[in-house]
Length: 233
Ligand SMILES: C[S@@+](CC[C@H](N)C(=O)[O-])C[C@H]1O[C@@H](n2cnc3c(N)ncnc32)[C@H](O)[C@@H]1O
Image (tube, rainbow, N blue to C red; front, side):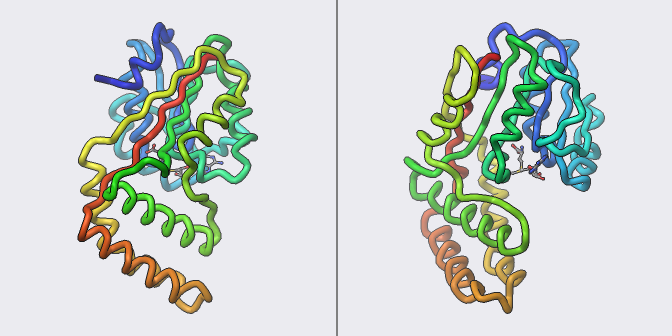
């Protein structure tokens, strides 16, 4: 079952936009959910991510561009669908990005927010949550921005604050392929902390990494459940 397709009933063929696309994985899902004759574009403000997405998926007919989601180049009311997947917690001023997404969305079009959350997770998923939180701390120390993921009800509150109708909320789990990737990342977690060696947080975060690796050996690791929020403009 294509959960995304189910969540876009009666969507018109046309343009669809995946914001914060990174390597384009969600853009591909969006392309699979859109009717024939549609065009899917992924944007990311990181030029190297957009380039990698292009290398991976351009032959599928998807287009990838480098662009800041807080100030998009597109005219008002361009897209039938505008999506943001697992990116909200990477954006400090996310209100600005959500307003831009609404601006470029056509009236009657679908706004999609897909976001993993941290509460109600089993032991293996809690290992993913801990790993993700540690990665977010490292990212912030190294000059990036990433907050800890929200609780399920907090994501719903953010989404309910948007001027949309016919809202739906669907929980879903990624396929196992992501868990193998997470396990590989887990094996390198303590090494990742070396990037901040010499910084005041180093010792604490090194210990945190070793503890998370021990928990992974005991419980395994599984991607946190995601909440797919959809509403119409
Ligand atoms: C966790 S990744 C996205 C994952 C991907 N959407 C998925 O679901 O597999 C977050 C991405 O958001 C991008 N990003 C962060 N702030 C952005 C902004 N203001 N404009 C565009 N992209 C942004 C980052 O460069 C990063 O590639």
